[in-house]
Amino acid sequence: MGLSKTIWATPSELLRTQQPENPVMFFSPAVLQATAKVFIEGFPGFVTYAVKSNPDEMVIQNLVAAGIRGFDVASPHEIAMVGRLAPGAALHYNNPVRSRSEIAFAVAHGVKSYSVDSHSELAKLAEQVPVEGCEISVRFKLPVAGAAYNFGAKFGATVELAAELLAEVARLGYIPSLTFHPGTQCTDPMAWDSYIRAAADICRVSGVKARRLNVGGGFPSHRLNDVVPHLDAIFALIDRVSTEAFGADRPQLVCEPGRGLVAESMTLAARIKAIRDDNHVFLNDGVYGGMTELPMIGIIDRAEVISPDGIRRSGEGRDRTCFGPTCDSVDRLPGELTMPSDAEEGDYLVLHGMGAYSTATNTRFNGFGEMTIATVLSLH
Ligand SMILES: *Cc1c(COP(=O)(O)O)cnc(C)c1O
Image (cartoon, rainbow, N blue to C red; front, side, top):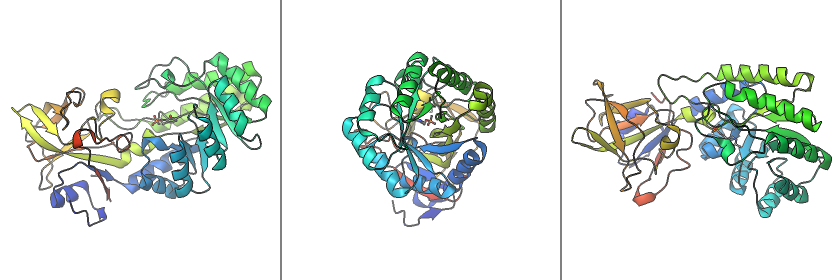
């Protein structure tokens, strides 16, 4: 497909003129920068971006242009890339398990903020990370409901262990801070409430005043037509509860959204390869491609169907079972997706809010997964 033009007006302009045979991810820099401004202006603290959710260089560049000055990085590759694209930005190495060579790489690249959730990993950091000006945040977890899946299943110290670790961090001479991740796609602001209160308890038990509290990612994106996320309500709750829990010792706040920042800026178009027996819809993209996350987090129903002439199908809604292109029977979208009854083979299924955990986890399984990213002025 000849993508000679670099910026398109809308997805349907590209679909009509190019009729792409492979999936296309449409990127709106304007939407990304507007979402970044919502966080920068609304969040009561320092906003960093969780690079893993979408590490595309255009994404990083547009976040820098919008004023994002901090990045949550998890690997030497992310450290090097952000160091190149956002020189001078703060790098928070918040993957709590690192090899000794990864730690050496981070120290050499000027990383000054690390997270930790175990005594053994703290000892590893202390061997190499200079004390002067370096922050170590203790990551803790609670048994919590309200997230699409549980981030505490892999990382995070219990409250008791976190208190020990925080005291140890302070004793070693590092800047002591706390961090947590409430889980991803938390539509209920209460997901943050108990975590912030537990953070204050950890400070009281350990006798250490935390410099900063990183309230994680987990900010929701708009996935279902009927569930509109309210970032303002979440920001307000975080602000209020931090003051209630910590009083005069309130730490500086940090957040590290991935999904909440980037999801809305990308829209995915997948072509309908076949509609079998007026029931099953086969797409040229699926769970091994840009839709990897849907079986774990749930379907996105913000869908349109566009004909090859760029016309939006408007038939009455009909529930369809959708499959991806590979020969693996797991390659199926969860539940059913409502599509207009006049959708046809050769049309494009267009899904909005697809910018997070999609381009980065796209595979080439079974020879599929060739995906283009096209920049658009408007996603609608
Ligand atoms: C993945 C991750 C994030 C981003 O999570 P979202 O739910 O996408 O906002 C933030 N912090 C850490 C430590 C992560 O691993």
